[in-house]
Length: 336
Ligand code: ASP
Image (cartoon, rainbow, N blue to C red):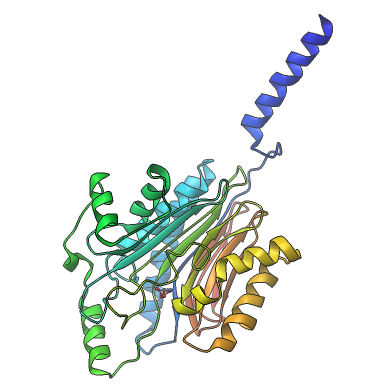
């Protein structure tokens, strides 16, 4: 009788600890989050005012994720909410403000991944879904599939009640002018402005989400790395959550996000070493227009590694430290 009582009370204690202290049994008030708003060259239109504006919007987006994570919310919800904000902001190449293909049509790609169960959802070539990352989340949560494209993906998003818009909703004057310059051959296509977010929550769960209009000057039907799981987006609780930005073809060919995770998994690399290895020793020698990644590991360490002159980036941790930056070497750090 006494033994049964002891057994039951121990069991009860274990269940309580599991609920209060997260899946690994350790109490954690720790969370981390990082976001990017694309990598690219230091273009002359990157004035001080524009940099300030980008930083302010990134900090605003960050605060949405912080408020979810600091209340014990899930990393998967935090990364989605941050990416939705950035998709709605016309400064970035995702959702409103996305680049067009050479025909002047916006075709959008997005992905989301939950590191706790390796579930993922992705969409590509969307022309009328206001927030592609929401469609990716629904593919993950409400279908047996990982990746839906084009009209089928749009029809699915509609059936789930997502906001549908005319393709012109995504246009801005700046993007229209850019497309004209690319078509005339007076501007080289380059990647900039894709958005992404990675986070670790108090339960030790990692998540990543990425959304983009793709590369400027792209062909009709071109799909980049962003929705390709393992290339531009990846999350695994035993290693890291990673979101990429840059010359997508290279990210696909090098399977960048998975390669970083694999170096940690198979070779015991730290996140920072794995990210540096892949960006500087695998991507850089391939040429192209480069790019970068943001990532967070299972201990909450953040890496933001890029081989371009600029990458819009911001980060925050539960210890009250946070930061923001646009140009390489110009990182502003703060403490709450
Ligand atoms: N990686 C994106 C793509 O190739 C572009 C970007 O990051 O700006 O579609």
